[in-house]
Image (cartoon, rainbow, N blue to C red; front, top):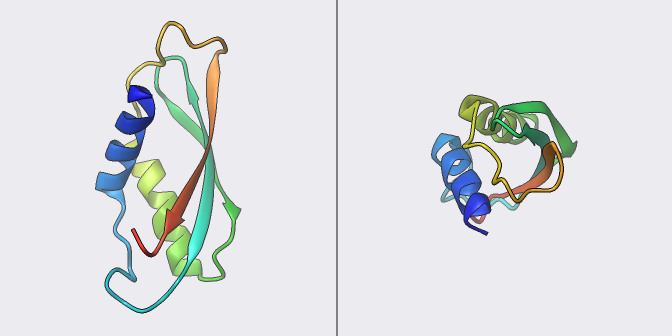
Length: 90
């Protein structure tokens, strides 16, 4: 959906992959919630990559985004649960 594209673009602009261009394969999943007003909260590493620096930069990208546009009116609940995967290949 268009909202997911906005979310990915805003967070992607804040992500500085410390292993970009290196032959390292890491994956971290960051969990967070977005309320109806677009506020981001409950940010945590859900799946550890095994590298503390990598996990921290992924989490910081979400925290630095702070807010997103309000959830679409057709959204049925009061918040959106997000499980965002960060891959070194991206």
